Image (cartoon, rainbow, N blue to C red):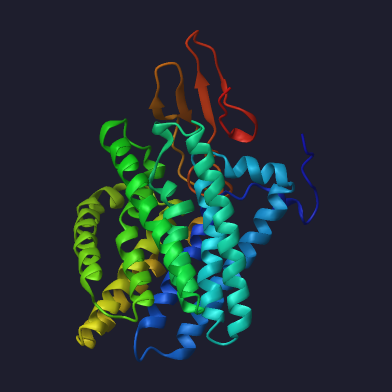
Length: 371
């Protein structure tokens, strides 16, 4: 077991959960919303991108110091709850690279290609675990859309932005296919299995993101024309948007944690999609500024509350939330008071209870493994 580092750098060794990369992801989404708004102040737009880039780089450095070894990173990536959030590292990098390409085309293209390659690797590992039976249905939540669906759709948008149209179509196709496959699986799990613990309820917002993300990507791919396929995506987006409105009472009853950043990219993607449609239909004007203002206010409110939470240094305790009950194995996620180290989920360690009644942790580093 690695001995904790003491001294001024000791705090950097505290666990940095992967879902906290959602902060940079949400800020990048907001920066994208400002970018597509005609007439938005360039200085403010650039500031949002710089803040997102700084948070992304800082998060990557902080996670690298906390993880320490490649083996630990692989264990984190395989975690049944937090593992899918690893995809946010290259996916956010794609968005930053595509924006960089506006000022430095070659550098931006290189960044996008590197991030697409990293996302493809993460997606392939995720799919391999699914194919070999290492994903329990009860551990599924909408965050599992990130490694393949979000990566494919945002990869398509980013590749199109840097001029690689054929590769963009291929990435977009991957995202759409995996949305159909995984979306149905996750919906079946949410509909027919025990409810997610409160700490994971904000991930429901991720389930509503794909139609907006796909719509934004398709606007980039087809030159901004509201064609037949775009209209189909708009219909799906409207249904998913209404479902999120019905979930608002549930969200507002939850204790606030850093896990609420799961809502931010969906908010930003929806705002961006709305502005794309307003622009495409020549309806831009006061409505566009209203959409931008609401999107910015919602994400800023989460940022402010997150800062306040970080200053207090505590997370609401959620004791022993039962996440699943399987025929031979029951998984319990232990949520304790953990501050920013747990990303709002508590130290999410599956506890396994076998048929003979014995209990214990499901593998090293809190990662359940099947024999």
